[in-house]
Image 1 (tube, rainbow over the protein chains, first blue to last red):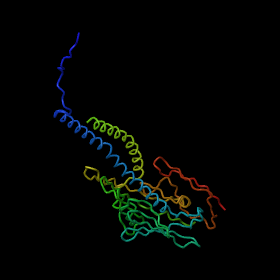
Image 2 (tube, helix red, strand yellow):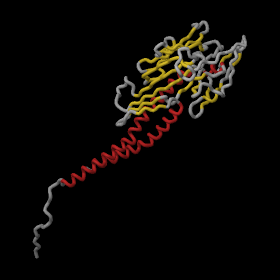
Image 3 (cartoon, each protein chain N blue to C red):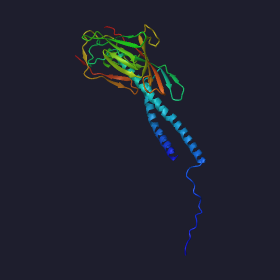
Image 4 (tube, helix red, strand yellow):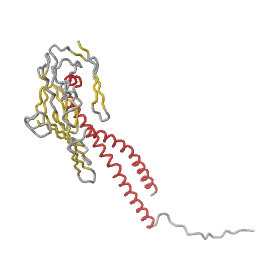
Length: 202
Length: 127
């Protein structure tokens, strides 16, 4: 007995590819995913960039405030670590420049050191620098403005005031940075220096 | 098409993983900004209008009243007010011939949670 094979009657073979309906559905799903992705970026990535910029501003402002607090504490730190006497390196006065871009702090020296020691704060190339003799130290970066002026204790301007008002504006990224795209952040910090109490002789 | 969808899903998982880091850094930022707040903030964010936030916060750099506290710490107090009411007012000049004082070890500061100085410990040697 011989079995003779029957000719196949299955479905005719279809050529590879996808229909226009499948393509439309795929495009719709991709568009939906893109929208969801954009929302996720707006939710997470943008706050991350904001937090990064604001943290840098807060850190630099804290560094600048600490440096000024150290120099406005009534005495200049002695590098030798020996406090000495109450007259050595005692704060004398402060002299802000007429345009406010420079603040000079004067201290009383002790022989054989110079009679007067000066510390200068000013902005150089988007940096706040502290100059003591030939030593130039960078106190903070991203500084776009530094202004010092005499004022009253409440902060109102007064050329004969007893306090000094220091305004520092920090911007991240600063104009010297190669990264100039958004986002960018600026913060203006206002510090008022109070003179040390005068010592009444006994 | 499937590869693209898998790529999108993986990217979404990566962005979700970014969330804890953002939250952690945001908490640190709040701690930093609570210590020193700017008088004016200006934000230029992506796709948003420029925002200006005014707090008008002013900080005072107030030296200690005690001259030896000034001398030994050489750091003014960072306060929101022009004076520190808890700082004892000792403003008299020491008598002539006041002994010379040396400091055998560094001054240590006690800080609170916001980084403000709440105590000063100094070891001095009087000749």
